[in-house]
Amino acid sequence: MNKEYNLKKDKWEKLHYKGYKFYFWSRFPFLFVPFSILFFFSEDIMELGFSEWEDLGRLTLFSITPALVVSALILSMRWRFKERQFTKVD
Image (cartoon, rainbow, N blue to C red; front, side, top):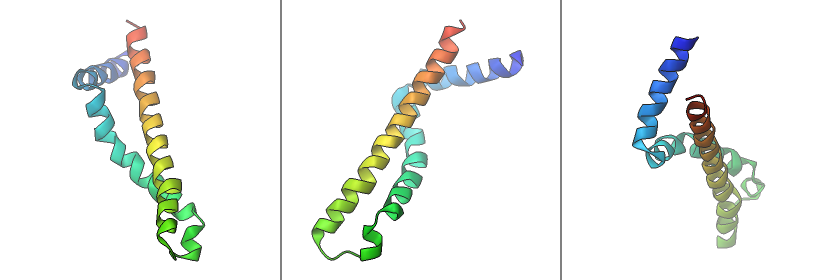
């Protein structure tokens, strides 16, 4: 158990050394793409079709924006959680 913890801690220290920006952008596409697809197909505009430019704006507002926010929130929370987990024990 302790060996496994030390491996995770070493991996975290290497990742933490590269910084939050690297952590965020290396994981962001893997969360953003599925969330944007999920929000995109859950929007009712897909059934009605695109009749006007306003529909495209609405689709962007209600599918892409929440996917951005949710992805960024999850990554930020994971970073903070791991940061507390490995610095608290030392």
